[in-house]
Image (cartoon, one colour):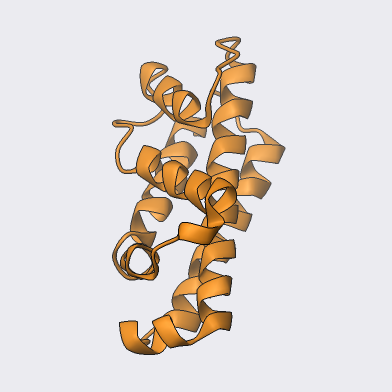
Length: 137
């Protein structure tokens, strides 16, 4: 697969969002996170944008490969595996599902779930970035 400037820019933006979120939440306890509305809002938005970028990249690759369209964001991630771009749909599909929860069921986002993702799952987003980057090489 050829390098694509749009995808490269999105990968850089994804990297930027993850590193900024890690920086701003480093050392933050769950209790502090739960009571800090701006921190929760920042985390929700950063996770949402990261999910959006992952979806955008997947859909662009699918279009470039002439392998689409797909009906859902989760299908877009699954198609990347089918195309051999990523090794497995998990954990990426679950990040996209969290993005859907944030966007469509925003009043029910569990702070424990969000905290768990920002403290233990952000490296999964970076792994997605790395897999896409390798596929473009």
